[in-house]
Amino acid sequence: MNVVSLVISSIAGLISIFFSIRLVRERNKISWRMVETCTRSLLEEIQASSFDPDVVIGVGRGGAILGGMLAGNMGHLPLFVVDTILDRTDGVSAAHIRYPGVLPDLAGKKLLLAVGELYSGQDLRAALDLAKSKSPSMIKTVSLFSHPASSIRPDYVGRETRQPLSAPWRMSDVYRTRRL
Image 1 (spheres, rainbow, N blue to C red):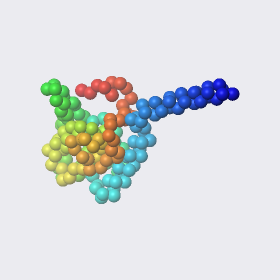
Image 2: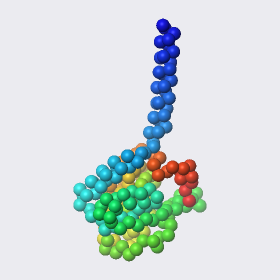
Image 3: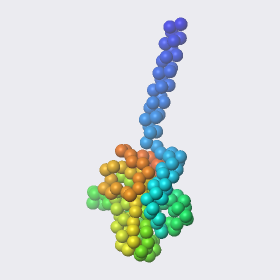
Image 4: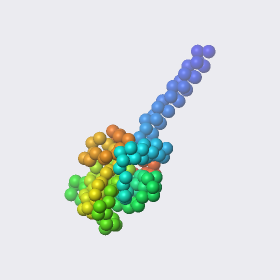
């Protein structure tokens, strides 16, 4: 009887260790359900602040996804997307807007700049500089996930995180590890 009890306890312990390791590995993964929950929260926060943008600009791929979700759920607002390039040629990384001419005339418009994930803040800062050059009347920023060490603090944050997350739109190793 003691041997059977010992075997069952050992198996239960191994199963517990397996699921604990799996939980630790997956805790940095974000589900689409979490994206939806955070986006709904952001929509409520933006509406409660009485900010009523004329245009939504998604910054990068994650910003395109969040921007589309926000623009569609805020009354089908016009949506534009600017892509970013991370330049590491001098050993210091700097974000630049790829094809900055894609933005229309934004003079006098209220803009909402959206990023999916904000870590260094370089992407959002580059987009903010570009947007300011278009003479809008107001600019607000939003990030689905934001790191506290970012060089810029968005006006609206879905969730603050202390470590990099694996967003659900990052499905391949190419997306996760390679950035132009």
